Image 1 (cartoon, rainbow, N blue to C red):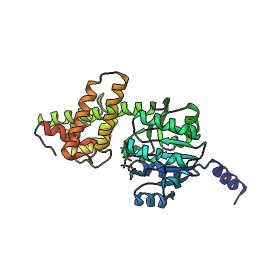
Image 2: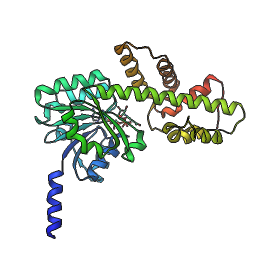
Image 3: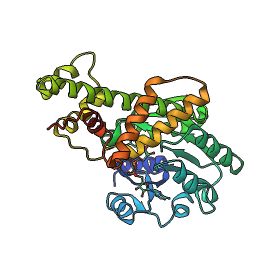
Image 4: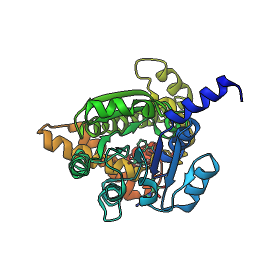
Length: 309
Ligand code: NAD
């Protein structure tokens, strides 16, 4: 090995962080892979053994339990469905806080309520475990391409120490305030995404019912002021009435509940949020819970007794 290569290798080893990654689903799997690709030691755990084996084949290491992933980690990342799973995995008797070393940093990247993020930070503090809430936007494609937007709540110094790790997963990484602030911004994001999907669905139904070719209509709309990342990412789903997840309606339903409670907590009225919440609930009630949230189009079609494509 040349002296230069030797120096590079030892520098890499110094920079290598041991990361426990819990939750290897649609989002967590590609995120964990990026961290392994960046040279970190990624010890992954999920209830799905298949997800754990897939990470191990992609350069990570298989953890046998939450404790196995958390003990000895400099950083523990959780990417779990909702509040109940984060509470169980982090606060449970055999959970992350029972195993993480003092000084470790827990980054919860799941979308949960701001109150859960604050409760996790409060429980972690006496154990010397630092915590950030760092929910993401950008969907499965954003995770695969490592271009997520990451909205971070917690102490500024902890954010600074996590910056390299977060930069390996996202393109727009912003510290937005204290514990829970990341989740408030994520709730605002979910309100916007749900509303934009619903309005695109209404625009599509209007165009089709009026005899306009929907592919041409959406194409030109997307080039103007009404264009959006949502439309770009969901255009094919809309046109083919194909809704593979993606982001599941069930998860968006959970998120509209977070929006609802956050609005109540802040004492503000959000009339369009209430409409979006109802549309998402209607999609779920009609059996579309596992479909992508672009399936709001099916709800708007149902209201109009129409079925396209
Ligand atoms: P997912 O359901 O695909 O993945 C969650 C993973 O957590 C699953 O693999 C599941 O087996 C695992 N899990 C559940 N309970 C566990 C436990 N007790 N111990 C270990 N593993 C456990 O969900 P996802 O789409 O990856 O979303 C994860 C989070 O990211 C959610 O909070 C979601 O709202 C948010 N999010 C998702 C998207 C998206 O487009 N899918 C985008 C932004 C944010």
